[in-house]
Length: 450
Image (cartoon, rainbow, N blue to C red; front, side):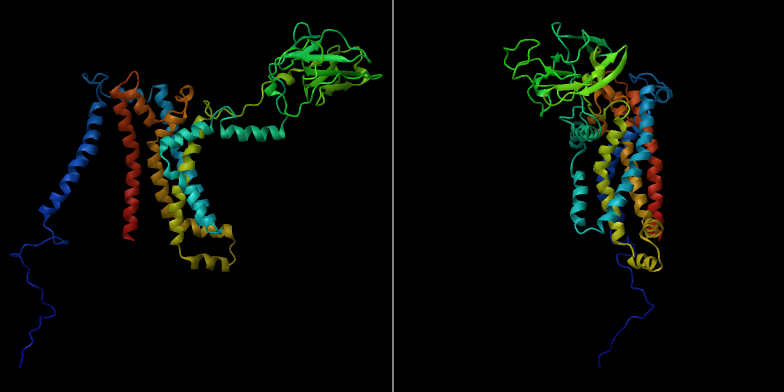
């Protein structure tokens, strides 16, 4: 009869290895430290030492030989250029994360309701695959002032010219032999009063043929009309040469759309607009008046918005940042939406809540942890923004777009480098990042405890 030996239910197995306890993973502490040591050495060399040296260096002067105390920190808050950088960093931290998170939330919610939601997400997220340097170059071209090169101004000028009159003939002017003279304020007037039945000639030069309206027609001599003032306004320039002043050549174009005013005693008594061939007609009330080509005919064409000027350069660069990082926010928020209990949403709809109420009272509160992650991540990211500002902002407005990371680079490696001030700015950036990181760590620990 074979005896069966069983362990007592309450008995613990005897510890092996002479009674020495091991860690949870069964690995001795010395072995664990051995594996962690290379990482700790790299962390100390690449993170701890640079931070410590930056704090130490920030208390010394430009040369590093004399103790400066808090002078470098005082300069941060007294130098106008650095104060501008601090102000712009505040704008970045407040605006960019909030707008990027809002856009990500909108995109994530809407893409759940469209058929091609995955493709849409791919398009929105694609800018994340582009480096900051490449994005800066792209948007430097997008914000180019010349509408022929800058996409933003090309669109803006197109919309403007749709609802407003397009530019006339900038730099156009008469020659001394022409029957026109300067009238003040950029206008031109006829040298003599005009009479009914005698066609008037209003020749101008100074307009490049390529700048003429595409639908302008060859100029024609105006026909006399009883009781009316008729005339022709044309470009008195024959391509290829051979023309004569004050004589309409068959190759010369009419100044389509140019405005003509009849002026008596300083008052405008009649107006007309030239046809495609440059001809115009005024009523008999214009007899005895001088004809004037107002300055509005010769204004410079609308050239769009100075996106990279002192006033708009920071919002413009923030726009390029949103183009890149809205996709990042959308992907994280979409992941949160995917894990949201749908029965809560359906129950709210059954109870009579509309879509806006469901979104505001259920979707957003449930997504609050995800939104906090996105916001904190983007806040840390914008505190050290450098590439976009350095690449997009031109030299003339770089001071206006300045941020702390860029000022750190300029103070440390610029033409008049001051490593003391640069180190102080680095310490300031560290102090600004630490509260955000501590908030994130505490939030993650609270989430873990749940």
